[in-house]
Image 1 (cartoon, rainbow, N blue to C red):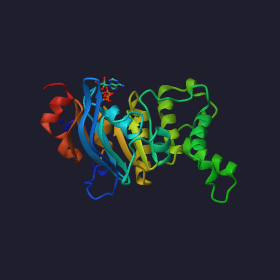
Image 2: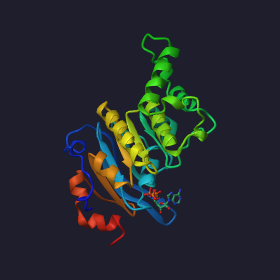
Image 3: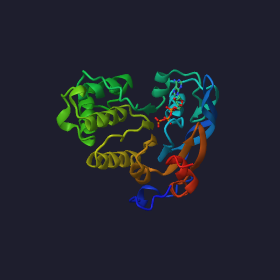
Image 4: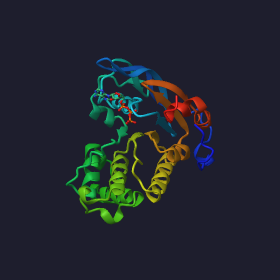
Length: 264
Ligand SMILES: Nc1ncnc2c1ncn2[C@@H]1O[C@H](COP(=O)(O)OP(=O)(O)OP(=O)(O)O)[C@@H](O)[C@H]1O
């Protein structure tokens, strides 16, 4: 992809090669009837970095997430989290192991307030019991306040999700994933539809969470975001993993650019 005209923040994309592998997928396949949505995909998600999944519409990116999180049962292949197979586990068990995700269609509790949306996740995760000496109530309040602050939603705590602006809803999705205390975040187009201001805030938030030890795999179409946030990029097309490497290698590959921009 020719990125020459795009601002490239090199601090976000240092060569990354040695990290522990948190999640492995091996020879994954997903058939929907005659459609081979994922074909023989093997890749690793390494700890503490941002891996971006890119590829044209219908490439199989969300399907890959769905197989990792137990929302779809692969036709063949293996998914391993810290060496243990995730196959056959229901989504809630996989979530409890430390893998959280967001969805393209947001899936917020629209008639609950921002604060309530966050609290439901914390309660599901059992976080309230880990209050480290503080009363559970104080710990919970501090935790929610910190998440609201970091996601720019401090003044919206008591606003219902349905009454938020679109960008605020996207940040509420981020707030909810933060509240899970998961180690790996799978983000499905978290920045789509954000205005430039909001996506500056989004990049800042993601960078600071990664600096604090979160591992991220993100599906993203916005090339500015891809360029600015990726430590590794995996390129999918028609269910196949065509390339998986450092951003420079992928973004400067003219064959991948032609596929991405529909010019093949
Ligand atoms: N549940 C399903 N049943 C049948 N076909 C499906 C199902 N889910 C996805 N597909 C098909 O599988 C292919 C891959 O879809 P997927 O949503 O994973 O692509 P994607 O790369 O995430 O696309 P986009 O960037 O548009 O979100 C598409 O052809 C899609 O229509």
